[in-house]
Image (cartoon, rainbow, N blue to C red; front, side, top):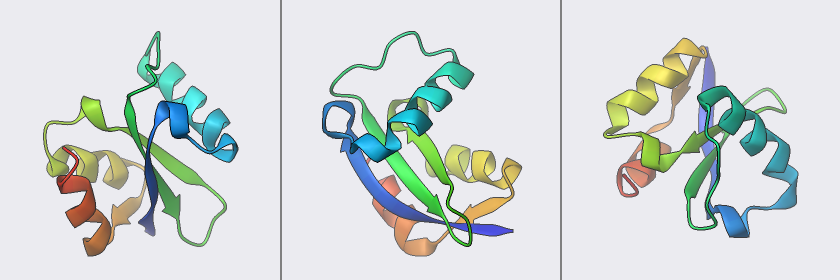
Length: 89
């Protein structure tokens, strides 16, 4: 199992360019037609890989939904990241 560590929380308009393709890919998977400039997006770095997991924070009602999604991706979130994400839900 991999550990997911918070890389950052950004508004789409402030998203670093390096994450753009990850965000567009996740939007396509979720069937999201539009990403608004003010949408909050969390980028989780997956330790031991060069990969990132994208979370559109408006999609989640609670932290357990995020944990479930990551568990399905064979990852879990560290405690510090969980606390920060909870503050943005």
